[in-house]
Image: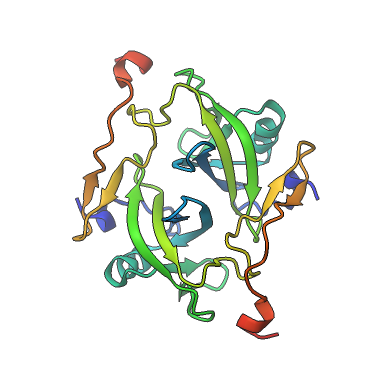
Length: 129
Length: 129
């Protein structure tokens, strides 16, 4: 079966996509695709998403140049979630300069704390101030 | 800041949660929590979710005994996605008997194919026929 037809898109036509580093399996980000951005991702080999807040397509890295090259796409048993393994160009996924969007943990009291991972770039130099 | 207050729940009061194997970082499943199931997950150290289809709380493993013991919780930069690293009791997350819900890949033509990973248990023996 074709992936595009198998996916059960939600009431907004979207499916959550987990972006995972193909080298060490670190989760880099979670975002959403609709049928068209999923099709473009398969065809171009670069991740494309639907932005729920900006209501537009975007290619990861279109501003920063930090694109994601797809190495593998996985689908879950319910066909309502996707894992996309990628090579992250530039090394950093997060617009704040961290390798992963998930640079904070939760301490035993349930509070957010920094993981202590270093920033790989200065956001002002990549995106402008 | 408290995780429970930091999270930006969606219009249905939910946040997507990526469940990741704490040993090898494999993505085991994607599911949803609301504020109450997230609170219970933090307090008990076992993953609890909100089922969108059944509209009820569930603890992973409540039927099979294959619970998930939480080792770390991570939050992304937008506070609208969570990664939960777990030790999967029984070794298999998927109700079909696979280690991960993501036991299928997409081939170069965009079609779903089995990864070739073995089943770890017979679903009929765990859940009844």
